[in-house]
Length: 188
Image (cartoon, rainbow, N blue to C red; front, top):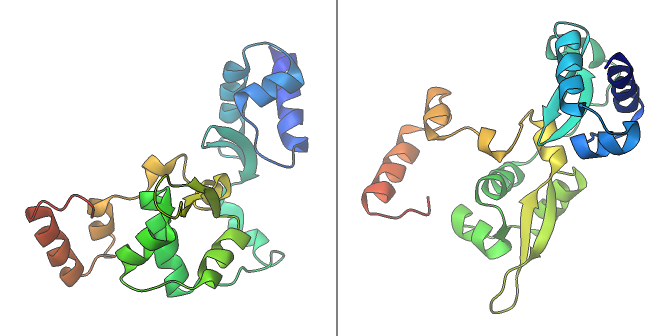
């Protein structure tokens, strides 16, 4: 087992991207890969780097409490516009979603540049076409989105109660949401 743990550690360390259990097994051969990952995860707890699983893929990352040490050497990404932030949230919560559906939720048209910015960031990808008139292009979030925001899966996105507790829903939004729920509109 020790050799398998070492082989997985070396493979993850050298990999440029996150790896699934199956991809790790391709590199290190058959064995108890899941058990070896659990051993490694325990070994790296509380250290400067940690082994994490995001969306079924494993990678090493800097411990969150030490991230401030690296900010000086890392280029700060530009901030998203309000339109891009809203569009990203709609895609994350409703994916796969078309441009028309995004616009219907936002209540305004979105520029092509907004989706381009999100795709350049690697957080949004085309996800096929909807069967129907015009066959509109659908959009979905990516593995990089999950990794960047520290989510294991989309199920980890905050719910309404979490957003209320964080003070991110203002009373007007909350009242409108309650009216929609009472009217039976489930597409909130």
